[in-house]
Image 1 (tube, one colour):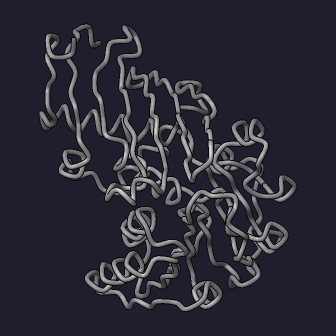
Image 2 (image 1 turned 90 degrees about the vertical axis):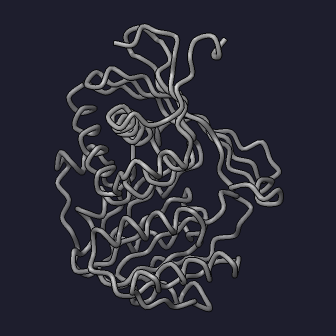
Length: 326
């Protein structure tokens, strides 16, 4: 139990130095999902505001009985940052003692947002993707493409990366990283070229509903898997019936949001249902599978709890004493 007014500040650089692997974050999310099923983790639906000018603001809130933590994250996704030489995603996380409400840590949100998103995809991919997958196609080549490449390279025997994105600099950077990992890298000229024949697909375009859909699920081959991290914005909604299995992250959250990730009648279950095995999913070997998600408080909580525990073990971060904290 934390009863003091001191807390620790953990920067993204400090988080990178903790040595936490993508698989560890995915395992932490699976544990959090089981805690939620058992009533030991309590979450609120993600809140989001899109006020215009390419800005997307969101927050998540969760309380866990196992770690006795309250975790609150607030993030802004904006194109303004890129023009100023800043990351497109910026935000902070507060980790508080769940019993006393005292602040335990302030954490930069960029690393957590990147790895927990890829870890959510990993949890679904462990159950919906072909374990022998060797190729992955990225539509959108920013931060999420890099985090998913790292996560999927741990999970699958990858040999080829395909990249399609509007920005040549980001696309070339992703291809370079793939080549340094010993993978064949292909800069696709069209999104259809990227998707056709790929075993895995990750879409992470800018969160902007003015973008006209340009992806067709019918381009995907049987038994392939798509991780849709961008609210389904680039996908033709009427093509999603091509997916044999379509899973979302949280049904209660989805019910509370007007703009849906996918046609509701196509959604078979969410992550908790996928772990429970209810309803039972009969995989169609002649169709691709899909995990579409907008991000959930549970993912941020699991990654943050892992960070707090690892930082305490390694005495990492900058300790802020009460007088400096005001």
